[in-house]
Image 1 (cartoon, rainbow, N blue to C red):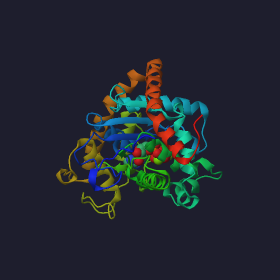
Image 2 (cartoon, rainbow, N blue to C red):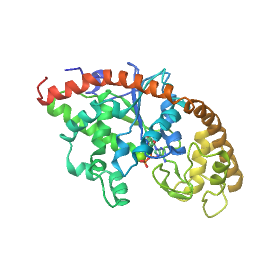
Image 3 (cartoon, helix red, strand yellow):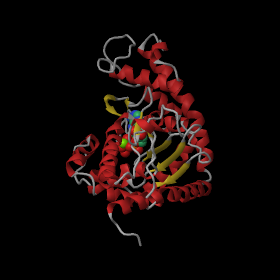
Image 4 (cartoon, helix red, strand yellow):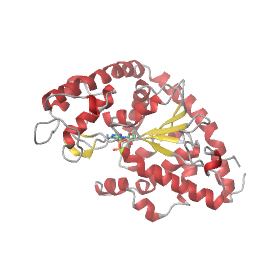
Length: 346
Ligand code: ATP
Ligand code: MG
């Protein structure tokens, strides 16, 4: 059995504590090809993940299996998987400095997912907010939508990840991952590291520009979603048409002024300027500054992506190499989990 990676020394079992001295954090992040990636995905997860590359041991997956949890088109899934890989690289997820792979190319994910399903309870899966929200929008709910958090837990635990950079919407799933890992360790022995979610200080939950009460999501068709590959004039138009709030003062108050606060959060995250230091004088000025900042962020990303997507064979090679490395890294954890649960080796 592999040793679980202790990170807290004398202070407790398995809990990750990246602020303490110790080995570099192990980071796992996943992006699902369930639609065209959005500004929310970029600010909430892609850029925060890319920023960890210099200091952490990073594993980034294109979670194509997660895209099967809702009605999907196979041809489009193939396209979107490659598109997302290209966009991740264009956003700074450099495959020379991390493991970048397609989840379905590493069978250990599905294997460990089943083992974790066998420690999870029906009630806790059913209580997940995302399951409740997404199942409400569908007539035939796939069983994999219910069990998806077990697969996500497997994704994280396979690599003994300590840190999981995600948007705020994924906090509950990471919390469940910790619960499942702790339960498994207590019942069968110490196999898994307990991970923690890491959220960006701003824009951890980018809201839909046309409905600031709803999260911007790539799988929801809305005029208030900014897609990373939207032409820049479309980006500007969407931001200039963003729903703002009553009154005229530009102030950050996500309860009373959700539309304005969303724009301020986007402007802050794209420019790296704290909200307190931003001072657009009017709603119009706020929209213009935000549009300029988002376009300045997206233009080089789109140029880089155009170069990468012109050469899909190279992108496929990158993913194949990443999958080989991921398979090697995942093997010891899944073997340890099977052995601990009493499954005999072949
Ligand atoms: P879907 O609607 O299919 O769930 P999604 O837009 O939520 O798509 P995911 O692939 O589920 O995207 O999530 C990828 C990463 O992007 C996760 O870390 C998630 O927390 C983050 N993320 C998604 N939407 C937002 C958002 N609006 N603001 C900040 N982060 C987000
Ligand atoms: Mg999501």
